Amino acid sequence: MAAVHAAKSADDRRDAEHVLRLSLEAPRMKLLIQFNALPDGVKFLVDMRAELLHRMRGNHALTALERDLKTILISWFDVGFLELRCIGWDNAPAALLEKLIAYEAVHAIESWDDLKNRLDSDRRCFAFFHPRMPDEPLIFVEVALVDGIAGNVQELLDESAPVQNPKAADTAIFYSISNAQQGLAGISFGNFLIKRVVGALEDEFPNLKTYATLSPVPGFAAWLDNLIKAGDPKILLPGERPDLKAATGQSTGLKGVLKDILATSDWYHDETMSNALSAPLTRLCARYICEEKRLDGRARDPVTHFHLTNGSRVERINWMGDRSAKGISQSAGMMVNYLYHLPKIEDNHEAYTSSGKVAASSAVRALLKA
Image (cartoon, rainbow, N blue to C red; front, side):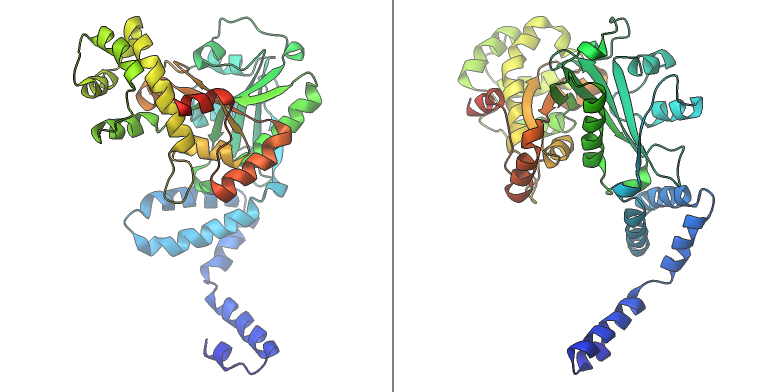
């Protein structure tokens, strides 16, 4: 630093800054980089960072090591180095199929029959691989080729449903995107995966016109619970109260009643109750998705942030889109369709990343106005 301050000319300063940068590089970086030449060395570092992320909680002495390791992995896992593969039931080794079952993070794969259904002729599964980890998927996306935008994941994953002709389908539904390597957390290539998959699907199925997701809303239930505790005046609108009164037999304290209902695990089995909650919860989910922000301006829901960053539009809120125990507890059964309209992807991305503007369909905007 003294040499930088003492520099008399621009050339001297540049030389001094170069020496300074070299002196600031931790010796451990040279050691870590050498793992790239070892069999399974890259996988070892990825797994080591996963362990570091867990162990560094409350242990700030490990922070610098984790940052150095992340810097190395970012350079090694540049999207230009990654290979996109389509994984099929007949062309993938059993060991890789087992990893799909283990790494699936959105909708658990319950059995080999379930996995086979997800890899049938009207489905596709794409994953990124790194040349130094050829047998380990980094991130993978599951796609259903259907007619129209799907709104219910149980129907989409129904093993007894007839197999559709993929060449006659007009819509590709991305219903699950799973990061397979915890050690690559914070190293984003999900947006590149979606763009590459769209390109691959366009080449194989020129009949496809629509690309959309069927996505969970993992933070909705927790946000709604806090909203009720805070006594937000817009939880229930006047027009929504009569149906809830009729369903519960309560005429006062409806916010507290709503909290108690959602705390149970089987409220949605009651058709009258479900119908009474449909309008307010759908409206509140639209508010959560489109209007609730973190301090840095990004969408509060992580899945929403991911898809908006990638240039999608909030297309539709699906009531009872996920009736699984996980779907009910995390999102009151809600699911969201994010539409990837190819001519608008860049504009949507720029609007969101620069000013936080959320692209939404007229149907979703109508919910917000309500």
